[in-house]
Image (tube, rainbow, N blue to C red; front, side):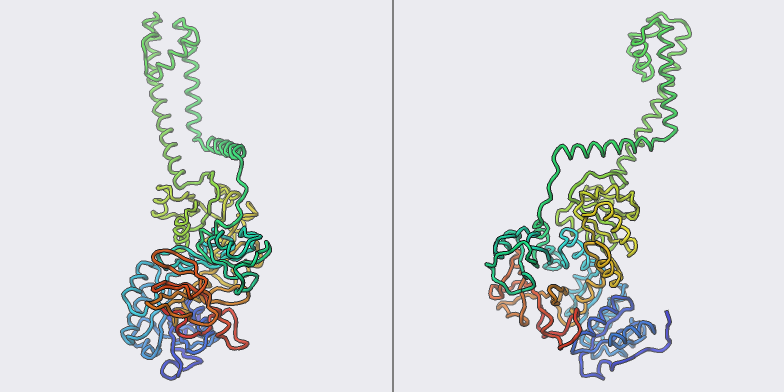
Length: 590
């Protein structure tokens, strides 16, 4: 990177030099730039990016229309220079949680009225910040993005999901598919909503329709509701017969037995062969020396080598020659040695089997499961969402942490310790019977390799990829038959940008050639009217219950409302699309 020694302040006046409100973004990564891009696409404010001097960063910020100040962000003088005394919002969104918190608190020291939007990985700390710091919103990128990954894992039609209410609420989401895929052919919209347990918000691109309209199988619907209901609304797959399941289990058992035989230690094979020779030779020897038939000789050798010694047959009782008195004790010693070796081998094998059953590579006989590859910051949140929805989860992780191992020990998940890019590892996941696979490693190319490998083995499998680079994610979606590919930045940047002015912003979605802002608002003693024209109510959280809402007139005091607002009404003619544009200040207030 090229770095400059002097602060860079291009393209716009800052703070007190402008009549427009000032929003300060603090950070130097792709998220900070994308937030600037989102903010600069709106009207009614100036944007400045504060980070250490970097000419490349400055050039990109200038391309969006933002000013850039190249100074150390965690410094009172830097904050004064950037105009924090007159700014309306500051947004520390770097990948350093401690730095973000320090910048936010110093900004509040200088300007007690400034609104703070801070990025924090720790969800618990984020919640406490919101509860104790006035006019503050804290967002965890991993948790925010994980909701959509988990939603798409259970419903291939899902394009955005969130928790409502935040932190403790149920996972809800938007799903777009044909009426036939909702199992709603030939019934009215009202009946369809009752059948699937979700709110239908669009029919064939129209958000205004009659609830008595009869749906055709080819009608395209957009529904919003609990992800468990949307998951269960898909047509059920034809289940296997008992004979097919038994045949499959037998084939799996034979493969596992052959694999186990191939992994026997060579020394054990040699010892077992030597033990068999000793046993056969001893049977022949004692049959000759004690004048026994082969069955009695077999019985005598077995009881002697195992040191059982019932006493019914012995050299003394049978009147054997003197050398049998030496051979019998020697046979006992050999038997003890061989028993010790085999007991140790069996114990080690049981320990290995237990470890393999807990976290090792083994073939899984599971159905309708979800395979999660990668358990980093986003992956662990996805696993939590899936477990809350009572999904059977198979986790593939090369270096599992203690928490993941403990969950495997408690039988909450099936853990395979291996490289997900290795086709052999995927073979153990029973992909042909899986519901979906979610690739969430830290590498874009590794996630793509996992997705393509899974699709090659199971063409009908739902595949969801995490891709850091937004343009790369869109290219993957166009070029490969991948169910969904999402960028974490793409999912979170619009929400962060919206929070700078509207505290209730939960995200931004697009369907039917229209962009919508997703907002949340807590009603007072007297329910407030819709925050803007053409708002669409979705659900309310009322007395611990999630309820669908079709009309704002149905609201009651202290309802927590979730709604969407079409953004085209706030754009200038010919303005850019797919960006969150400015709206009235009451758009998403809490």
